[in-house]
Image (tube, rainbow, N blue to C red; front, side):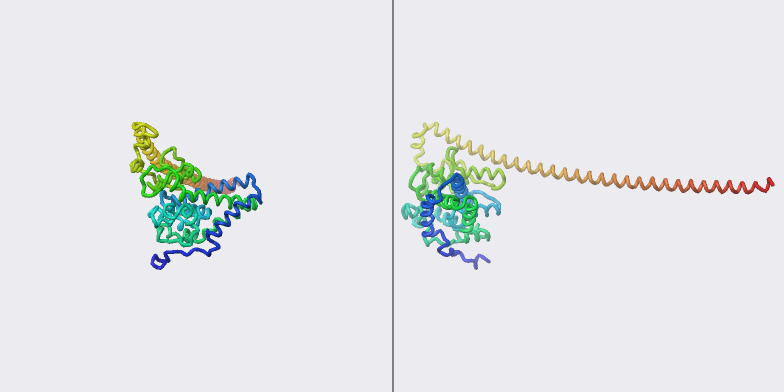
Length: 395
């Protein structure tokens, strides 16, 4: 289907299959009440924590840093994995989520921002926007770079499938207790962890950079969202794969992306250039005097720049080393293959030579035996003739 004939806005599924206000409230009520009915155990708590971390990562590293901001690259199959894990968090589909998030950055804290506490109040920016019927459908025009993939359009429309599969797995692992804690409580905690970035991270925290919005850095939110709490950093340079710009700013999502990059699963992780780190600082002099002397602040900035440069150099060296190892491995494999082929050829030649030699020896032996037999026959014939010739003479 061409771009001209394909509908721009994909209509949402029926009301009862959406993350609607009714479903949103019911899951909250069930997650608050049912734990007292089914009880709790180590397995259910492990499910709750593990699935919280997994799905929070699916939102932060997948929906946010990959689909919304393209801060790194990956393969098509792992792109689908990111979409699946993100969709299991019950925050609708990747195209819907990333498209609206791009709108948020384009119109941040203006009347066109869909979840600005400054424009519509804290609670609407926290939960109201995701349950509002105004935002049900997916506008593919907001995210044409990923809308071209049919598998992503499928998972965007049937975004409830990953959660249904996850719920079934929770039941298989720990029965109804697993469903309540793994699929219920974990989901609610993940919701509010994510939603706090839209609401609380624009109200509570510190501002390092002079952005045009009210974004703030909040270390508490950074811990519970695997690094998303460095929100002022993010709005200052949104295309970075790391939102914790400095070493002391914990960013678990970025650490895992670095690990995946070393394994070759993801690549080309974007990082803020050195000049971005020092641009548009809020009250730079006051900030420096509050923590360090002017000289120490300058030294720390230079140290940060040096660490950034070293980190980039290390990444480049690691990439070249990986490429060199790959090339050497391929050369060794090629040499081993050629050696095996040579050994096979030599073996075949030796076998053929042995066969030919055996045949030659056999032929020579046969010929010699034939000639020897012929010679014996000739001698015997000559002897007989001589005997016959001498017999009359005696008589």
